[in-house]
Image (cartoon, rainbow, N blue to C red):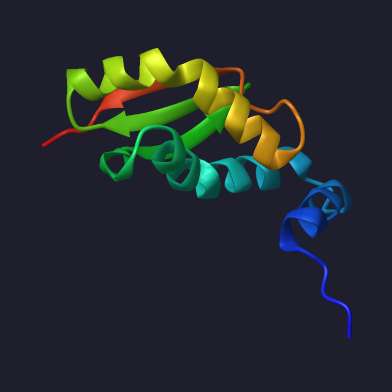
Length: 100
């Protein structure tokens, strides 16, 4: 039995779904923690992607310091997310402070 890697199946499934934008957004939201931890470190788990709209990925952050941290790393984060997805889906990061 031959196994096919999930990351190779997802782009085709997304295109066939009839709603590639919705599934692409779900994929980006799911990949956020993996990519953020890879680039920034374990502390990035304090952030949470919650929406992708018109190429802008919205992320909840616990403090203004985290907003600045994501801003500084945004080129690498965007590049890595798009690389994981296999196409240019994310063009900008936008942060929102998490309400207490």
